[in-house]
Amino acid sequence: MLICGVDEAGRGPLVGAVFTAAVILDPARPIAGLADSKKLSAARREALALEIRDKALAWHIAWADAAEIDRHNIFQATMLAMVRAVDGLSVVPDKVLIDGNKIPRTLTLPAEAIVKGDATQPAISAASILAKTARDAAMVALDALHPQYGFARHKGYPTAEHMQALAQYGVLPEHRRSFAPVRLALPAEQGSLF
Image (cartoon, rainbow, N blue to C red; front, side, top):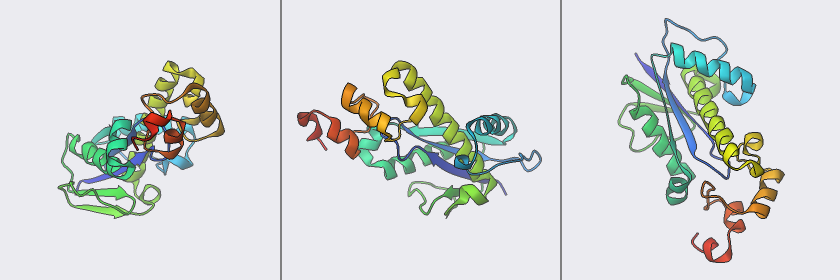
C-alpha cells in the first residue's frame, strides 16, 4: 500500500505563503532520522530534505500565497495547499495521512488525520521537513528583496524585530493583511477592508 504523508509549514507567520508537502516514502530506501521538522536543527532539516527528494517514490511541494490566505482564511488556505500537494504527486497514493485533526473536504483519496503525526509517521515527518525547508528558503529569498525586515532571521513570525519593521517600513504586498498585527499596521483606509 502506498502511503502519502502531508504536512504544512507557516500557518503562524505574518508574511508569505503557507507551504505544504506530500511525500510517498520508498520502503526499499529508508531514511534515518526522520522527525518533526521543529525538533531538528536547520542544518539537519536541509540534509534530510535532500535525502527525501532523492529517495522518496514521489514528493510534491505546494503553497497558498498571502492573497489566498486573506481571501479564504489560514485554515482553508492550508487545506487548499494540502490538496495541491497531493494532486501534484507523480504517483497516486492508496491512502493519505495528514498531520492534524482535519482532512481537506476536496481531497478525493482515502485519508486519515493524525494529531502529532509528524512525530509518529515517517511519511508525515518527511512532508514536514520538505514544507519547512521550502518555506524557509522562500523567507530567505524575501529577505534578499527586503533586508530591513529581517525575514531570514525570524521567518515572518511576529517577533519584536518584525513588529518594529512593520511599524517603521510599513506593510509589504507579501504580508497577510487579514492577520491582526498586519491589519493594525495598515493605513486606516486600507485596514477597513478587513
